[in-house]
Image (cartoon, rainbow over all chains, first blue to last red; front, side):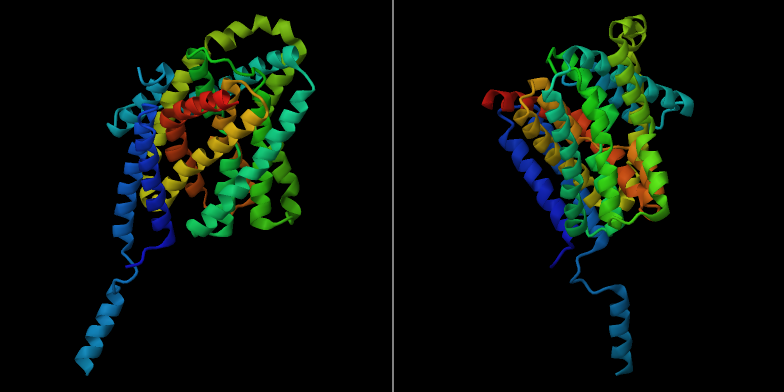
Length: 73
Length: 312
């Protein structure tokens, strides 16, 4: 399963923010906010990834083409 | 409280919009609040400039201009490679992030004042200097050196934008008239925090109304709107430390590096890059970066400033 580059980039950044936020949490309270921002970005990215669909899934047009060719044969 | 009192008004604006409360600012009032903040910041900086003008200021100013040139060159490859955006859209967003937000700067100053953290009072000069280079770099990234007949129009938009005219004008008036500005300073100084609270209430409404645009722009724009301020803030803080600024100064340079323009740059780029999708850049700077900096970024940059100052 492959995802587009913007999706992968967003996921990596979001997870890095969560990691940095949690690691720095003992030093600074605001780090929790950074981790929360990371979680929000990750959730937004998940919605976006679902909306765009991963590239190995067969698009609807291809499905109908396959179905038509199966009927013809 | 976790937030400064003026920041609480920003949250109120966001909540009011999300609750669909009947709350709108007349367009003229929003404009007036922005004008007030720009003149107040410029005047204050001009008076400080008259008292603290020294030769190292030239070095600092040149370094700040170079910083403004470098930032779009960092943003552009992120936008084209990771975001897979077109050259024109990437250049437009990069220009927004190379420039500065006067609103974010005003909030940072208010927070530093409330925490009694000292900073170089001539900083408004750096705000004006950082407004300009990013626009030129953005246009260069999109079009190369060729501008054709739009050159005159673009130069007019850059140098006659309200931010440059009012802040530079305020700086010059404050610098030249020095002590005499005390006659008008009660108006601009005493009302500053109150006006900033109203400005942030309005910005909260605007930012919340832009949130729905994020659905169409995708999660990359939201991610970029968070990661680019952190990169700019990191570099701004390092530059501030290199220039031997105070804790407040390091923080403010980090804030300037982290902020993104939403007034001057859109106006200039509408002329220079008419094909750029302005919705992308405005959504990123207004709906993501401004709230991020006001709510999360500024406290982080203050801690970062303290940390850099301790390291020396």
